[in-house]
Length: 260
Image (cartoon, rainbow, N blue to C red; front, side, top):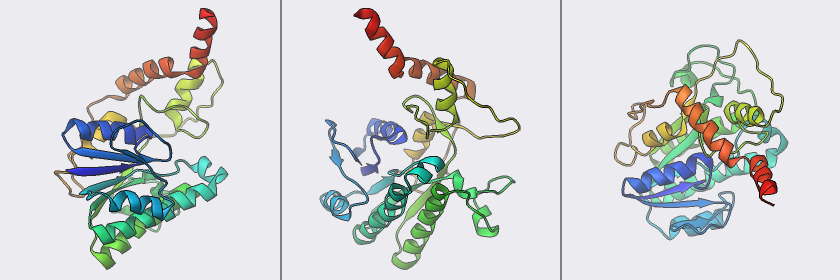
């Protein structure tokens, strides 16, 4: 199957491309930057011309739409990028999906559940009025409504995936990333960090997530994606710590100073 991953140089996108290639799919990727990779094109999903040139030049069977501005505080500080990438970018892809009839996997987020205090079931959004708590969450819910409208009006086929706190090797720390890279990075660098008690989170190890996502070319069905959590949180954190120790810019700089 011929597959495209938007945001293919990102944390999840990179792992997903590798998993799909390992299963024998002709896998293309696009992202904001130039790259030496085979089957890669630089493409900003906010720009319809760039996306149309990529999609129009290939007959993709399936597109994983992972390209997005991520995170609530990133969305507050860079709201122009957030709304243009997440909402206009998704609309651009949907217009092309309506024309070329490829299937799509939309990367949504658990943030759409907003202030809902109970178990986050898939049908909650259809039954309970939800207040999204930030612009990032709003854009992800808008994306889902865009998809539903496209399906209703143009009979497009899309599976929506609501990801929960995906973590693991490959996720570099920035002030806008999640709790796992933040805690690990600051602990490794002897920096203070705040722990809020009484909170609960569901975490998903990136390899487990990508294994499930890669089932979709052959198993394009909502609700039962044959997801298996093979990696315990303890093991996943251990692997992430090892990777971040090696990837830490500060530690590399120290090592270089010693060599000099």
